[in-house]
Image 1 (cartoon, rainbow, N blue to C red):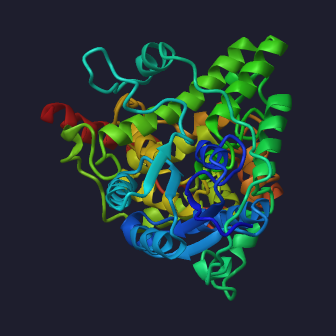
Image 2 (cartoon, rainbow, N blue to C red; image 1 turned 180 degrees about the horizontal axis):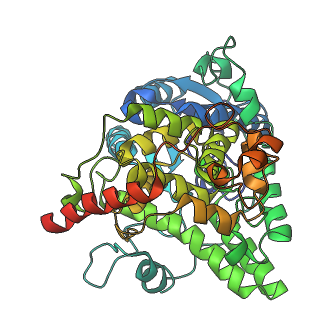
Length: 482
C-alpha cells in the first residue's frame, strides 16, 4: 500500500490482468493504483446490461477483485460524477482506461476526458478490446467497409498485425482507499426468491480470467481441428465458447489470435486456423459498423426496410418463440439453450433469427431485445449487426430471399438429433428420421416415443411453406421501395 497520489485504473470491459494495456501502462509509472469498477446504468439508459449479462458480471467482478488482492473499488451511478469525486478525494494524478466503442460510452468518456484534462489530470485511454481500431480500417476513399470479406482481406490483413499480448504485471502497488459499496450492493443478481435461474445458467461456466484461458486452451486442443466445417454442428465440440469472455474482457482477442495462429500452424490446421481468425475479425467488423453507424441498434442500415410490414400483433407467437414452444424442434432447442445456459450456438442463432423475422414476420428489434436480456455475450455491436444481417436490412446482409428452413437445417446440422434431445427432452425418444418434424411421424411412432402433439409438444405455430411465401411477398415490397 502507498500514501502517494494514485493513478485511477478504471476497469470496464477489460476484467483481466493479462494483456491489459491500461493496467500495464499504469503499473509502469510506479505510482500506486486505485482499481475501480463503476456500474453506470445512469448513462447506459435503455442499454444497461440485461439479466444474464449482470449475472456474468457479478462473478467476473468477484474474480477480478480476488486477482487484485481485494482492492477493487466498486461503485454504482453516474461514472462522470464518481470519477470526479474520486480524483478530488484521492488527489489522483491520472485516470487510465481501455476504450469502449458503444455510442453512449464514447459520448460519456469524451466528456470525462475533457473534464479531467481541464483540471490538469492526465487522462489516457488504450485499445484493450479490439485487434484493430475501427477508424484505422477504412477503404481507400476513407469510408467504412459495409461488406465483410473486403473489410477483412483488404482492410484488416493489409494493416500491421495486431499487437502481441502483454504479460501480467507483477508486484502491483495499491492505493489505500476503501469503497462504501460491496459487490452485492450493485444488485446484479435477481432477487433470491426467484426460481434460481441465475444458478442454473452459470453451472457449466468458469466465470474467471483463468476460466477464459482454460476455455481457449481446451478449444485449441480439442476444437480447432475441423473448425471450419464442424462449427456448424450445434451438438459438436468445434466452437470456442469464448464470446462471453471476450465481451467482458476476461481474455483479449489478441491472446486468442496469437494462440490460434501458433496452434494451427504447429498442427498443420491452416484452413481451420484461418477460419477462426476470420471469425474473430467478424467481431471487429461488427464494432466497425457500430462505430461508423451509431444508430445501428435501432435503425435499419438499408432504409428501404423502414416500411416493411412487420406483424407486430403476433405477441403470442413472440412468447412461444422466446419459450422454445414453436413446434419446430431445432428452433425450440436453441431458444431453450439460450435461456438455460446464457449462450446459443452460432448456427442456431441464424436459424432462430430467420424464423422470427421471416417465418413469423416479427420485427428484428424484438429478437435483439430478447437476446440482449438472455445472452451472457450480449454485445451491442455483435447483437445489432447480426440481427440486421439475418433480417436482410443490414450491412453485408443475408439476401431477403434466404429463408432458413428449420426442418432441413436441423436434418443437415443435427442429423442424429443430439442437440434437440438435449434441450427438448420431451422428444428424446423420437427416431432420428422424425426428430426434426414430429408432426409427420405415424401415430404409433409418436405413441412409442411418448409424444402427444398439442399436449407434450406443440404443433408448429406456422406452416413453413406458407410462411415463406408470405415473407417473400413482404420482402418484395422492399425491392419496390429501393
